[in-house]
Length: 359
Image (cartoon, rainbow, N blue to C red; front, side, top):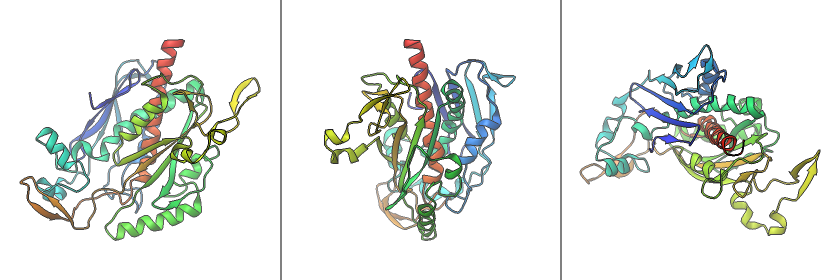
C-alpha cells in the first residue's frame, strides 16, 4: 500500500492539496498514552504555511481534530484518525497546469502511471500531504519521550553553499525556533534568510540540507538485514517531497577517511559501553548503539517557480510555462518538523518491534 508506512506503528495518510481535507490514520499506538489535540497542534503549527516571507503565503490554520482512537484524553489502542480541513485552497491558480506539465514535478509521471492526475496543486504529490505525517509524529514523540526520554530535533544545516557550523549534541529547540530559517547558527541563519528572500523576490527557489539528531535512543533498535534502522530511516526521508539525498553519521564524507580514522573507538563509562566518537551516526550493523543518531537529508529547490520554462503539454506539444500559485521559495524551514516526524515514526515502530521480539 503506497500510502501506508510502518509495521507495528503504522500510518496511512490521505487527502489532496486542494481537496476538502488532509489527515492520517494511525494504527498500532499502544493504549493508555495521554495525548491531546493541543499537543499535536504544536508540531502542526511549525509545519503550517504562511509563517514568514520564506514560506508559501497560503493561509491555513491547520487545526487538527482527533476523530477516533482516544477516550478521556488517552489512547485506546485502536486506530487514531486525525483530520485537518483545507480552508484556503485556490485550485484556479493551477488552471494552466491542467494541460501543461511542470518541469521536475510529479505531473508527467503521475499522468504516465495512472492515466489521470489531480492538477490542482499536485494532489498527493503536494507537500500538504505531510500534514498527516507530522500529526502522527507528534503521537510518536509523546510515546518515545515517556518510554525512554527520547528527544528528536531537526534544523536547517545548509542552504545552497551556506553551511552552518553546528554540534548536533548541543542544539536546543529554542535555538532552532529563534529565527524563520530554523537554523541554530545565527550568523549563518541571517545569510540564509537573505539568500532565500532574494530567490523569492526573483521568482526562483533554493535547496539545501536538513540535519536531524535523536538523543537517548536505547541500544538494540533495528532489524537486520533488510530492515536495518538506517535503511528504514533512509526510506522515511526519501519518501518526503523534494528529498534527493540521505546520509547518516559521516555519510559521504567518510569516503575520505581510512578505517583507522573512521572507526569509533569504544570505551566503558559508568558501566555502559560507549563510543568516543560517533562517525557511525548512532547505528552499527543496522542496530542502534545508544549514541545519538545523526542524519542529513538533501532537498532540491522547489520545482514550481515563476520563471518561464520549456515543457510539454498532455498532447505532446512543446510549450512554455511560468507557473502560478503560492509556493515555498525554499522548502527547508517547513521541512524541519516533517523530518523530525519521520524520524520519530521510524523509532517508534522499531521500539515496538524490539519490545515484541526481545521483551
